[in-house]
Figure 1 (tube, helix red, strand yellow):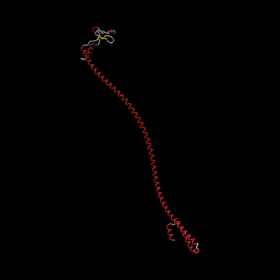
Figure 2: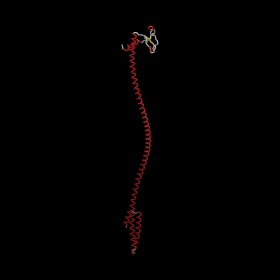
Figure 3: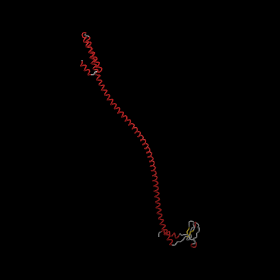
Figure 4: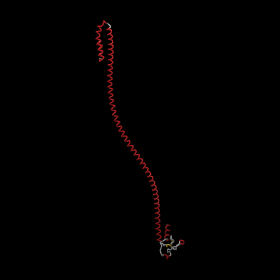
Length: 255
């Protein structure tokens, strides 16, 4: 038998329930003073210095109680192991709880940071949207201005084309006028040459007339020559007013 079982058995033999009147009532309860707490035979002294009788068990009852004590001790060890396991589990749970609290605090901090970042990003997004709307409005305005400018350019191109056409027509007209002017200049030069020639011829005839007038004997010839001079002067005036180079040739042939 184990040592603990023997000790429990001896304690069970010594300690028993009180039995009134056993052994002639020698263990009747009595109050003793603290200075003389000596129990009588077959009795034990309680905490209040009162005597308590003990009951002596039989061997069978003591053995049964020892077995019960062994079972109780085994159960106690099992309970202690379970309690130690529970303590370890509790400690681990406490550590896990502390770690979870720390993680929760860190997660809360990260969540706060993410929330602040999200708010900042939302503000940036709102600012970007506002800027985008302004850009879209400015682009639409620019497109409208560009369309108006394009229309103006088209109108200016049409005007330039019309002006170019008019300029070309003016150039053609100017070329015709220049050609006509050149022809008129040639005709003027020819007329001036004819006038010069006729002037020279007239001066020659006048000189000849003077010479004829200075000779009395040639008056008859002068009278005959004078109508010719008048006719030649009339021809010169007709040629100066509208005769051309062809008429000059015919006049020279007549002379």
